[in-house]
Image (cartoon, rainbow, N blue to C red; front, side, top):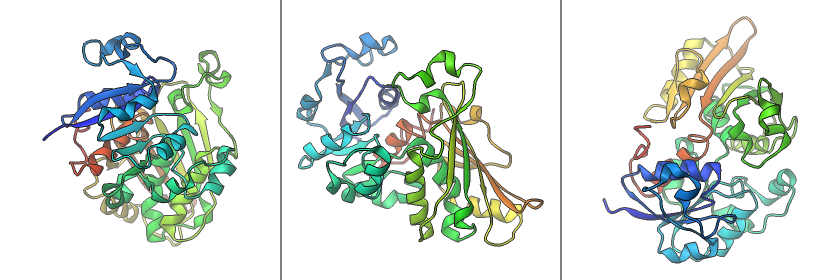
Length: 341
């Protein structure tokens, strides 16, 4: 297998660093170019000593990175930056996996409403493929531009997809209660994520207006074949990584927990990164791996469906899923470079 030449834009952010760690262990990747807005000219391993002797590449201007004869570029950049780069590189031959939110939504109107600025490359929204391999593998395999999903939407969509596609749930009854580590709130310094404010504390984030809400609603509506509105509330935990969701919904008809379990087992059969559990998963079960653990059950007393799901937000919710998407785009085994985490 001849290695492909890969570059990372935004190499020094938390997602970029996690991604580089994964690419180093990938047997079919040659990491040849890294860029950073704030550290141009510095050596990557000088900023992150654990990479000394392994990634001694200089950090270059983003404009220089496309001259490196690359096969694929990862954009680990803030929202708003990805769209300008994808627009600039529209005529290039390399594949792009964008880890920002710029191409995740289905239209520019939703993007403006939830992200509060105009989308500068709405044409890219039409050709981008949503990068959730368990649901859209065939489209990803043929794509030049893949929008890596958000961490919370990844967990929510995987947890709910079997119900929505099979019509087992009342669409307007869904409530998602999420708990996530501090890395899920981004690397930008904010008062809410400072150590003194998260230590020994739990808080609700972006109540009623979290940006991931529209992403979750959009793709669940696609799966269901009709529009839905749901309640989504994330909470910030005093830990570094991981997402744990408890999801509540009313069934469209009565059934038993065993039927629900069998539905999920069949739906995710031969999906290597989704594990259907016999007991509710814990965050510790999924930290530092690229798996989503899901426990579906039915509460006969209340008549509610309960789903507990967990992922590592930096892996299955971000960098790990980006590598999984790369594998699909290149026609490789989905697990390549990820199975031994």
